[in-house]
Image (tube, helix red, strand yellow):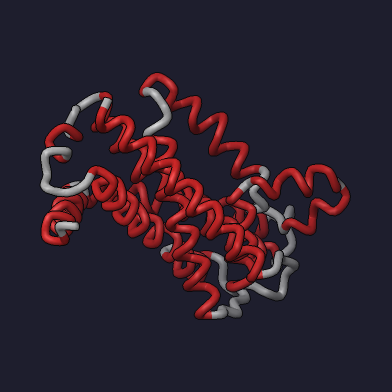
Length: 254
């Protein structure tokens, strides 16, 4: 593998990110800011939610922000480069295997997802005080990296599978159901009264993202086992990455 070329591709994406800094800042900060303010501040202070709900909600907001940002950061450029700008043709001429072009996009998406997720914590501290944190540093780092990889790999798989005219359908039929059935606004144990649904939602990787962050950020609330969460995230990361790489190589030679 030509590491110099790989580094040059990453540097190019970083340069583009600097040029679009304002757009990226709005994309990265605005969404978590709205989630934190509306659900954590407005709903609690208006009396519709108990004060402890702020701490329960925080991991879910972080998971949503990471998944949306990672999917968007990878899927939209892939769709544009293959179907609009045809910029991918220039990249395919680089002295590097096609799959490494896809891996570079995944790494760039992971970085954006990590930023979008981590920024939720200081926003929550500023807007939702007091929030009860009890962070497990190693567990939190592992889960956060796996969630970032899941979001970027999912973005690659979706970006290589969705046509330009189906972009809206991708968000309405894939991402929206993932959020509402991803245990972002409630713990998985809240579905005990719906045993069939509780088992069905386990096919949703966002469940493990939300529960894993809940277990390592606010373990005082009910959550799935951290070991089970990490195992499930590893499975989904590998599955989506393999699908995304195969789809990318298939589109590259077609």
